[in-house]
Image (cartoon, rainbow, N blue to C red):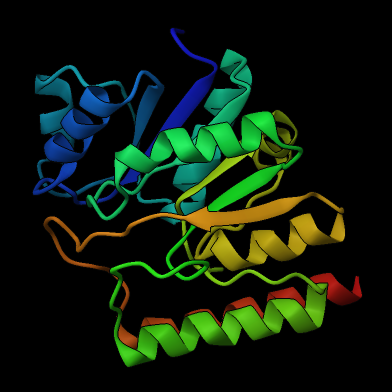
Length: 229
């Protein structure tokens, strides 16, 4: 362990972008990293192995939640003080890692989220995606009283207390919004800072309009349940 920060990179069928993502991370950061290969069916595993990238292989596809919880369990076991989620598709800019780390290290926060909307950035998403983000922003305000402009952003850093929480309990799929409800109920302190998001560097997003509708319904249902119980 060379750092007290672990960058967790969940990867499912990311053969087109995984090498570029890791190389850019290594060239711009001194943080440790681990790729969680989530049962990829393409050449992701072979690329990770042949390049001797740090990684763990899940035997089957567990979804983003299962992959991230594996990473949090690894971070807890290895004694890391902080863990950061970094997408394998290149959308998250590693140059923002230091800003996320400094914000949580020097201020009293449990989670810091990299946001596309807390300040003006170059991000341009589809109308449907922006509607979904605004929908969850309003849902969080109503259910938890917190104002998170970019609740679906996976670019986030957490401290060791939250690492422990997520190691024990983490939603299986589409976890980003649901865990914010969970943390807000337990009075964890959350902040957003500006980051730049890039276009996917390769591969294909698994989120279709139908899956997005399912995502919104599922997250709303479970968030309502959490807010009541």
